[in-house]
Image (cartoon, rainbow, N blue to C red; front, side, top):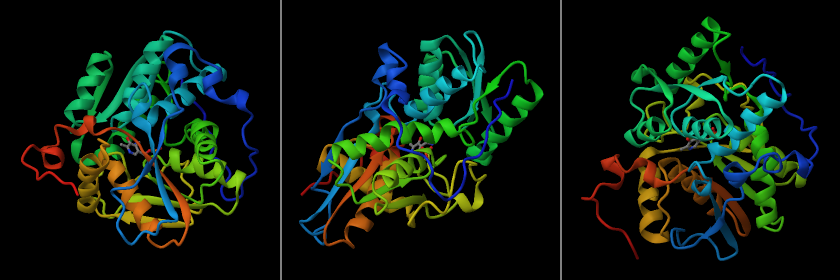
Length: 335
Ligand code: PMP
């Protein structure tokens, strides 16, 4: 069966901040109850000198989630939502498309709750992701590497249409429970951990779930908070996990009017920042974290004062096979 999904209302926010009992952490136990509540750390050494002393930049470290990425939140939220709507029962097979992290998160949640998983994944997804999916025993359908994550989406749609009784298609790109995960947890955590002082929120766009849900929550708490989205600056980029919206299948949950500003990160500058995060801050972050911190710095250097928060979706350990990023021959950085 496929999950009927509604698109969220665009524009105006009518949602009240979520009652704590709705958060998924209260509906699960054991391993899955450890999803979320990730550390928020202040960045200092990596910030350029033109950023004033009254501007703070903080990053939320999502690789502290048990499945190793921000997508644990969305996967758990979408699975619980499908269960609550009576669409998913133990023994069923979850289907979705993913460039990797959502697939790993689904694998963890599916195994912990008794489901099978079929995942459509571009054949050129990196070795680390494929190895983790194999370890979980996931049924991987490899899709055209040249068609990227959009190719995987098309195959997932076709499988869902051809075999409606075989799969429960969760469709992370059009599933409100994806962004709701961040409305329910990521947003409240940032609000709590900055003591309500956050002034600017910067995040990369993939499905847009993290940006959308967190922005909606923070705006509900303080309508003056500025939300800045970050995309790669071209369709052919090296920022795995992020989407260049103009030439992609645009996710149904994406609302382009939500951001106060759209930034476009150059791959090489973002990757250089990934290396510097490791060398100067001790943070071994993933590639899209480089785009996130690039955006946070762009925002921070225009401020006299403020509290800029961004999100690092996964760890550099998921990219060690990318020799051009962390290769042994690279010059060590440091001050
Ligand atoms: N970075 C990485 C490494 C990711 O895997 C993803 C998810 N595709 C994102 C960023 C973007 O997250 P979201 O889907 O919530 O926009």
